[in-house]
Image 1 (cartoon, helix red, strand yellow):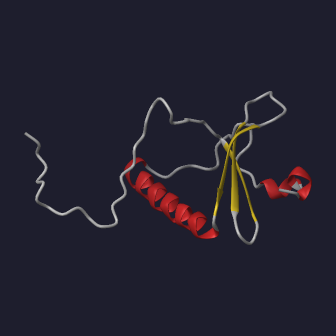
Image 2 (tube, rainbow, N blue to C red):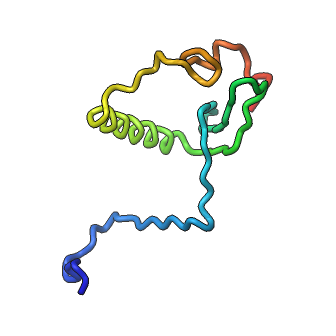
Image 3 (cartoon, one colour):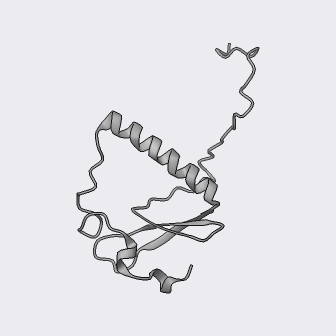
Length: 115
């Protein structure tokens, strides 16, 4: 017998999400490059490894500014919950290139300044 009460109404704005292991792509990223125009944000996720001269972009996500802000808020909320449970995330440690975190803008125009 099912433990759920089938007589209770479901919330109206509830979205059902399905994750199919056979078709869902899983990627690892330790570098994100974010650019934007007036109408969209572009997030390029890449992996960089010590000793390799290039970071390989594996995924590009394009979203509206509204969805980018929702993502930012959701990430902030989840990082806050993570830190409450596991402690503060230290950004002063060594990154994949041997240094701490960095801002890509410090390195001049990326990709010729064109996206």
